[in-house]
Every structure is written in structure tokens, then in C-alpha cells.
Image (cartoon, rainbow over all chains, first blue to last red; front, side):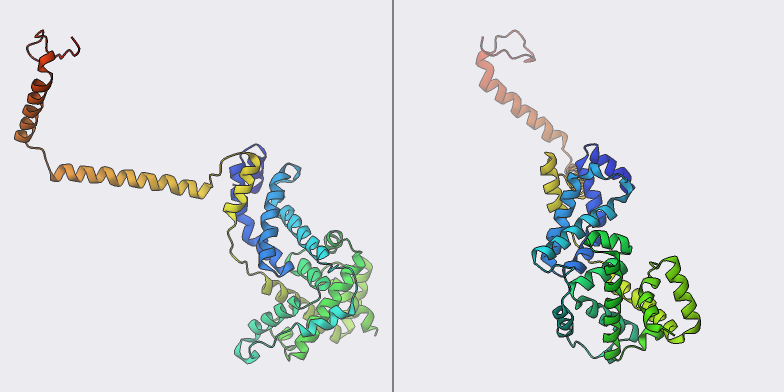
Length: 191
Length: 149
């Protein structure tokens, strides 16, 4: 059964059918939120609350087949609200954030123990996770969630040019780190 | 060659987020600049590596708790779809097993005619001893027993 049909049924009063949407999307949504907030408990709370909010507002979903993009947006907004509550406001430029990036990186296993590609991915993940929130969120929304600059700007309430510069900075920082780690060649060999 | 200016655009270029004018400028520069072409490749590779390193989906199950809230919200009882099905299957299995057991018992222990006859005699004796005083004699076959007369 397609999402649009399930959504119609739920709106029509068959609340039990909502379970189908939960089972289909909960893990995917959880992973997305976890990448953003980096805290399991918080990610769990956000996912559960998002499904409940979506259920309550389901009749406002115009394109019934777009349930997942819609609930993802609800969840990501909640994750961003969390940052605001924590006073880690995303559009405030801070040099401290940049310097703390290097302190957040753990040494981990020896690079020789892994294949080049796996090793690269592991380091890339580590470097993304260690980015300041304002850069990390933007690069995850772009590369992992495949959102356009316009969508990111709208979601974070920042200018389009800021999205562009943050992505440029984030990519350069990660690349610099890979070079320092002696993995720059991997960018060619694995491509 | 002004690589600095163009490199700033490369990140947006790999995302397909440059304007038509910017794209044309980047492409013209790339044609004559090998280091910037390398940079472009790096951005593409880095992008796919970030995507790949984050696309592992962690399996979780919050169905029960979310559905409990949803059903309480809609004022209905909680009957999870999958669990409900399992329950029906469970009851059916127990019923089938019981029936099969009874049939097997009946096959292994058939009632003999003597046993049945002996049981009937005992019943008749019991009825005679306990209810005969109320018997009005209207039916000698004991087909009808009238109480309270």
C-alpha cells in the first residue's frame, strides 16, 4: 500500500493504519535525527514526538505521497530547536568552534589496519561529526539528506550565501584534516 | 589564473547550485587549470564519501509507544497491527492443538459397549433411588419424570 493511501485511511479515521507509516520510516528518521543531534536519547524523543505531531496535523499534508519528506522536516526542525534551546545558535560565527574541532578528534585505530576506502570513510565520518554544529548541520543536510541550498537556507533561516560559504568551509576543513592524516591520496584513488 | 575566486565556486558547482553565469565561468576556468580540476574531483569524492559514511540506518522500534500515544489521542484502543495478527494465530494454534489432542485420546481409548451399558444402569438406578418418590406412575417407561407433584 502506498503512503498516499495510508495517509488517506488515517485521515479518514483509521488511526491504527498509522502504524504502517511508523514501521516503515522510524529507523530512517531516527538515523537522520541522530546525525544531527548526536545523542541517542534525544533522537528517540524527537522521533517519537515527530510521529505524534505528524499524526495530529496529517490533514494539513497537501501532497499525501510526501509523508516522509514532511515528517523529516518536522523532526529536523525539532532538532534545530534543540540547538537553539542549548544556546548553540547555528548562525552565530565563532572562532572558538573552529579551534575546538581539532580537540574533538580522537586518535582511534591505526590507519594501516583498514582498507583505504573504509579508512577514508571512517575518518570522514569522524571529521564531519567533529565539525562545529553550524557547519556540520549544513553539510549533513546537503550530502546526507540531499537538500537544496534553498531548502537548507529556509530551514535554518539563514541567507543562501551563508549556506554556500558554510559548505565550502566545511568541505575544506575535512579535506585539510584528511591531508594532515596522510589520506589525501585517497580522494583520488577511491574516486 | 585566478584560482582562489573559482575555487570558492567549486563547492557550489558540484552541488549544481551555481548560477548560469557562474557555471560558465567555472567551466571556462577548469578547461585551462589542472589543479582546479583535481580540486573538483576531490569535492565529488568527498561528497560521496560523506553520503556513504552516513547512510547506515540503525534499526529501532518505537511502534508500541508511538501507537499508544496516537490511539489515546484518537480515543481508540491500542491494537497494533502485527501483534494483533500474532495473537489470532496464537489462539488458533492452541484450539487446533486441543482438538487434535482430544481426537487422539478418543482414538486411543474407545468406549466399549459394556462400559456404556454399565454407565446407563448406574444412571437409571440413581434416578430410581433419588426421584422415584416423586414419580406419579403416569409413564411406566420413565420417559417423563415430573418433579414437584
